[in-house]
Every structure is written in structure tokens, then in C-alpha cells.
Image (cartoon, rainbow, N blue to C red; front, side):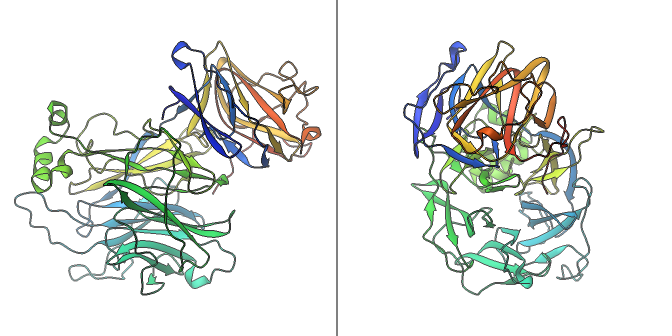
Length: 519
């Protein structure tokens, strides 16, 4: 469901739909019933879903799009083939680490490449841009162990994570889930290189599992959570389950979406707690779209190869995929944007295929290419899938910048639900034009401005920064309102607002620019 048509607000634990007059340029929505205050404490909050929003007036929530950068990895070795995928990236101990599946699909009529089972391959980087494939020497391929293969005991997918549970044994600091005959299998490793089965039997057997299944230790909720692929009425969907020991799991449950969300085929899920706000689940599912032969399909790149793939199975040649973004707060209910977050982009060889826009699982921060600019988030997407050399391209996005609350120069307002907070200052992640601005008002739960913290008292903010303290007549002090139910009114003029956070800052803290946190 797009915000050009409706707003989804959460009101007293229930989802309610309120129509918006977006087409006329007037966007007004208000929760129709009083809401319990949301206890924010000092958490960073993003506008990636409407969870905290009560009223929008001439403000739109707009999905942002990662920008393509260069190719960072080419899967050009004999054991890698044409079907490298389900990339998993994370930052660990000062470096970036990457695991991916290596396999080859033969399509060419004169195909002579030797076939092999699915391999798990490994690469690493110091900066997230320049990658190397270490010679691990663990498994032979065509008579030589000089390769980057780190695991063989999987079928189709394998997704590691770092287990941050405090009492996790050192020899199982790294865990992974992957599909095998009979279900979803758990693996463990002391270093992310040497893997073993955690137990012989699958940890889950009810599901399809033929996708990138994901798992992690939830530090906020103190439980393991797994997300995996399944079907309902022939439609690809996502299921979840929880565990205390990574061996025994609850009954899987299908993800829930607000009423009106299209029932679309979702291949991967890409769900994890956001690294700058562990209470918030973010997901990046791949949307699978069936297409029939048509004039437009035949106009897409690589028609001859597309026809070869379709001759093996039509959907391999005619289906298309793009990437979505979704957010949730309880692990099961998500707001999913139907506007694509990741598109295939300009038509060029190796793109616009079934297999595009399967993002590598994991967000990482990397240095900006602009000297002096703050760090940014990197996404990694494979392209040239089905061809002999799969390539991994890096994409970049502003930190916290998944969805922007945006208004034109004529101005607009976003008012939150009642909330409580802890801290003495409020900071924003925002961007404006030279003529634009952001101002903030703190109100009581009934909408009355608090003395000294009204819109008229607020000093105009402008610029483009990941973290700037809000001031009212020169003071950023808001501790008098800490712990009481308040609303925030954001007045935007030619501005994008991405996130806000109440926090405790010392009097000597710099007011203008603070670095992004993250790992």
C-alpha cells in the first residue's frame, strides 16, 4: 500500500486506515481514537513506517533508493559458475566478511563446464569496497584445494550470523542456517571459516526453505529468531519462529501485514534488527513477478539467452524480480512498502532478469566517496545472474535514509502519537535545500505547545546532517518534559526528515555535527 493512497497508523495496539487527500496536495490524517503513549526511552526512531505518526499535513512519506556504485567482486573462478547468490555480509573485528553460494547452471547448447554441488565461498575486505578471496585450502576442487570454499554441507542456501548471546560458547560464536534434505539445518563455527553441523536433525522441517533463510540472536528480546520461505495458496511467503537454544523452535507463523497490503510473492526476506536501533526490525524482501512473453519482455536485454533459459523452464526466462523494504516492531507484523526500494535500473546486459535485486543480507557502513562527508550505508546486489560471471555491485544510501518524511517549500507538518522519552536533548537526521528548514514543537498529549518549546520558539534548522541538536531560543534542554506524555510536531519546508532521537548530552557536547554510530 502506497502513501499516495492511504496512511496506516497504529492506534491502541490496532492498525487503522485513514484516507489521505494526496492528489489535491493536502495530506491530513489523524488517529481516530486516543493512543497509549509510546515509551521511546532514548531509542533512535526512523520514519520507515507510520508506527509513530498521528497526523500528516502536506507531508509525504517517500521510499528512497540506494544509488549504484562500482563492481566490487566478480565470481569468475571455475568453482563459482553462473549462479553465485544469497550473499551474506557483515562487519566483524575490524573487517568486512562475505559468504555466498557458488554453483553453475548450464544453459548454452555447447555447455561443457563440470557440475558440482552447492559450495559456500568466502571473501573479505578492509573497507567494503576492495574485496579479496583468501586461499582457504579446505576443500579440493578439480584436484586442488587452492580456493575460497569454506563449506559443502548445504543445498541452495547458507546464511551465517554472529551469535551475541552472552553465554554463547566460543566454538559456536558463528552460527548459520541453510537448507538441506529434510529441512532447515543449523551450523556452528568458532571463526566463520570452519563449519560443522550443530546437530544432525534439521531444526525446522515445516517449510519450503528454498531461499535465503535468516536467523539471529535478538539482543532486545533475548531470543533467537529465524525467518524462512514457505507458501500459502501457491504464493511465496515468509514465516518466522523463535527459540531459546537454537535447537527447539516455536510453531512457525506467517508474517502479518496491514489490511490492504497486496498479497505478493516474496522470495527472500532480509530481516534483521536495525543496527542503529535494535528494537526495529527491517526487512528487504525480493518481490517475484511472473511475466508472459510480450513486446516489452522481448525488448529487454539478452533476448537470445532469455530464450535459452525459458526453454529449460519458462519462468527462468520470463519472470522478473525487484527489491522492497518493510519495517516492524514485534517480529511478525510488518508495514511493507509496495513502491520498489531496489530496481534493476537502466537496461544493460546481464540485468532485468529473474535473479536481479536479491540484496546481500546485511547492512554495513562504509566511508563516503565525498571527502569530509559522513559515512553511508552500503548495500550489495548481484548482477549478470545466469551468466558465467556473476558480479557484485555496491550501492549506497544515507544512514537511516530508507524513507523520508518530505514537504515542499510551502511547508507541511508531521505530528506524532503521544510518546514518552528519556534524555535532555533531541537530535535529528535531516536534509534541506538552501531555502528550506526544519522546526520542532513539543506539545502535551492534547496538542497544546509546551512553554518555551513551541514552533515559534524553535531555532530554524537547515543543512544536511546525520545528527543535529534542536534548540529553542538557543537552548537544547528538554529534560523538563522527560517522562511525560508529549507529541512532536515537525514543521518541514523543502526538507527531508529521516530520524530523531532523544538522548542525554553533556553541556559541552558539540551542537552542530555528531558522527553516526554503527558497526
